Length: 372
Image (cartoon, rainbow, N blue to C red; front, side):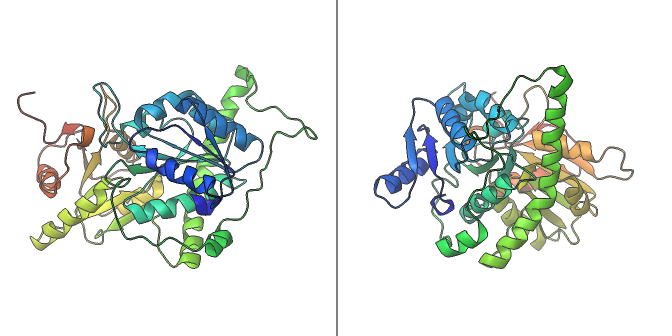
């Protein structure tokens, strides 16, 4: 984040996000980062501060988790609706009640319809890379939408991995200084967040939808430029693992991908043609890339670490929808795992694969305590 040179940083402490902004505050106070760190009394205020900063033409940053993101929700919608380019790190964590500080992805899924671009990191290195890419995507004049980089709480936020931290000169080459398309300026007055009557409001939603679609084209271009400058691949939209001849494919997002890859390796040794499709970008939803990746699959297991209570897993719902009217399609099943930090083991993934040969299910909870 510091390599991206945000001019304003504001956040409120909440586990397991706190240490991110604590380290940034230290860098600011010790003169390592030329930025203004704004202490606030709540996450709602933090989101409001960075909205105001971006509105005046300053690159900004915030981070949060769980209930903090929910407290921000009003402003989260405003940031996207006002077309403010911003990057937010969400340290994904279960939401209350009951109180739970461990990982799942329910927090971000609660605001998935806000207009933000949503990306999910598989490991710490990808979290590093996605932040650099997020500012490029967000500030593009054909996009002008905020980006939320999601990294699983504790699993990634407190996990120790060897990572490549790029040199500042390379980041400067990849990420130019922020040049706002519009900003609050006394010499050129404008209104942001105006009252939109029914004659105009719907067009604002259409505009955001079009910009999301534009991001589907831009993200692979940014990933290619990232590869050229840093010499490292980044998934961008989606990434397959052993899909070439896979008949059964597991689709998921975030750190669980690492466990799934381990399970797939073991299943492959046992003669099963299983593969993985990692969704890096959930919004905008990469429809064509997913259809292409799954064209050879006969059975698909969608693994969600969240649930739309009373409905289904959000990833399952979107994936099942894109196959409607496509003629021959794979048998798609949805599974809910890992809520509230429940362990997701290799055996968990193998159980899911074994269930694919049975009747398809839309929303099956895996490894739930029998007494409940």
